[in-house]
Amino acid sequence: MIRIHTNITPTLAGFLKDMNSNRQTVISLNGASLSALPDLQTPVIWHQENNTTTAAAAAQLIYGGIAATGRLTAAEGHFAKGAGINTKKQDWVTAHPKRLD
Image (cartoon, rainbow, N blue to C red; front, side, top):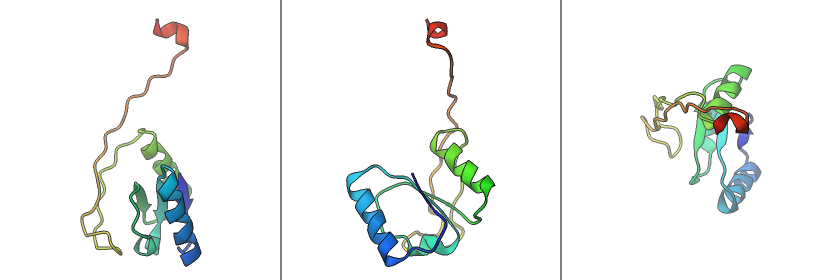
């Protein structure tokens, strides 16, 4: 997972393309930086604000702790208005291995 909380420079865009070409990546970013994101084939979690609440929500979303239902309200770069996907909350069970028998 790559969390971006700064403007996307050409150097950063190149790094993201390189990471995306040979690794599975998830990008989490906020604010206007979405419009500067290069065209990548990777999941993008975007939120308007940069704070601990949105950072925690992004982590929970990746691991299935919360569902995703948001959509873009306006076009941003190569992302169309209304872009987004729905995910479901996953019910993970943690237990000591002996309890699973």
